[in-house]
Amino acid sequence: HDDAPTSAPGWAYDTLGVDVTASKRAIRVAYRALSKDAHPDARGGSEAKFERLKAAADALTDDDQRAAIDASILDCALDSLTMQELTWSRALAALAEAEEDGEVRGADAVLAAARAYAAAERALERIAAQKKREKETAQIAKKEAALASATAKRAEVAKRVSTTLNGTDASVTLTITREMLRDAETTETVDGHVVRTFVVDAETESNCAKCDGWGEKEGHWTPALDKLCPRCDGKGRVIKKKKVRVPVRDGVRDGEVITVFGEGDGGFTRPKVSRGGVPHTGLFPACLSTHPWLLIPALDAFQLQLTPFNSTPTNLKNALGEMSDAGPAGNLLVTVAVLRDGETSRRSG
Image (cartoon, rainbow, N blue to C red; front, side, top):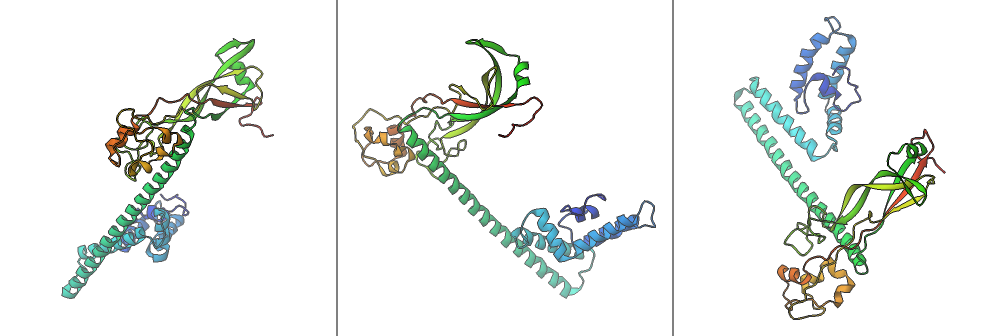
């Protein structure tokens, strides 16, 4: 570690061979041991090595310098719980070292050490409890954000499926050169044009296979923080990566758009409605009225087969049933970027 730049966050620790929990005592011990070999008068030593060791020891025994180094290594604020935890951990380590070295002598010293131990342990317990609370709060906030995102997405989907189940078109860019066109192996003739096939990586959206587009975990029929489908995060739709074969004709122009039919976003589904039982048009239990799928205007005209005001998940499942078959997929719109021979990126203008 002698040649590690002093601008690197952990250079001082690396130079002395100690970790971030090392006490000042451990740092001084490491410095004394290494400085003997690094001294200019020792074989293999040099002024540069010696000065580097001294600079590292000075940095780690100065509270302000060490705090700045630690905050940089741990990527946290100086007043963060992580820094407080590290400070108290070092205090415990220093107490243990003093006791092991026989420096705690006499009743008063033993009592003072015991009190210091207890204070450090209580502080660490408080910090651990606070970090746990902050972690739980962050997890709830994350779940709430996921629920809000899922609700917005499903409202968008519900609005679309109220009029059509057709998938939307997706877009991608295919970057090629004239040389690539000439050298492409797959060739056929279509309507008198020589056509060569290229493969493009595309990302398209489709219905989630795990929840069948509902967005909830199996057995749950209302959106909630802990009930979102883990695969689609409650959105009912997922992004998939795939490779698509694109036919490109000779003479294709830069910026020309090629449509690959049926390779865009997958078609949408709509909840089916049971046809058995006694019809209750527009009579929705409370749990139904908050479900994103009931934002679909077309559902208002359906005769939902429910026992009035019975809002159990089973009845909701029976009422909405399964999803319909998916509509046709959208198209993939491939914009061809034709580079001049020798270029590696699309030219501007």
